[in-house]
Image (tube, rainbow, N blue to C red; front, side):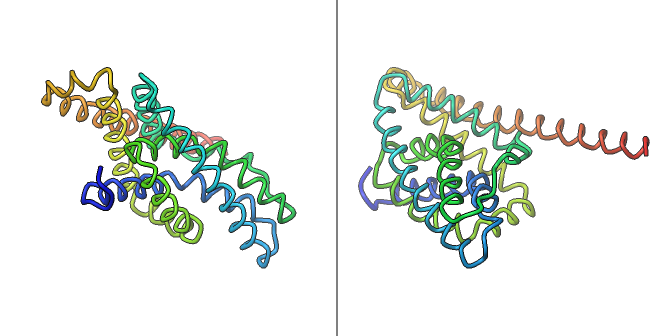
Length: 236
């Protein structure tokens, strides 16, 4: 991929979009970790904490970029990314209740960095796959998306809540990135290169499978919540 070519810009847009779609977790972590701090200190905690998380994210992505050159790991990374795309649709966002709020600047920073590192594996794998093993794309994508995550996180979460279809677009992009990673695995590449129709069919099946499975899980969870609410009202 040539630097700053149309393909490069398209891949960069893909990296930034994936980062933003998966940014809900990061925004929640930042907000929960800094919620008990004085407003004058909150900005410092968010800035320093996100800066530390960004450095760790870049280092982790560089390591993953290197690992993806190992035989069969593109296949493994693609399968993991398919699971991440499914979880993006299936999760209902209740897994953040155990994030403790910091009572001091450095406690909040530490919480943000550690929680982001623990929860950032999906971002790292997704960005490494979308960047097509291009380090400049990784760094540029993170530098563009992280400030948006920090300063516009609340707005972006509201946008996703108001327009749920954005999550489905994100799942489709992740599904495409995952299936593309698998087809570019060196041991499988000759087979998919010879059979272009099969490659296209594989990508379509993966995307459709992710969206369908995620939609069913989401619908099932919603119906369970609705029936639970009705039972509570009947008992009361």
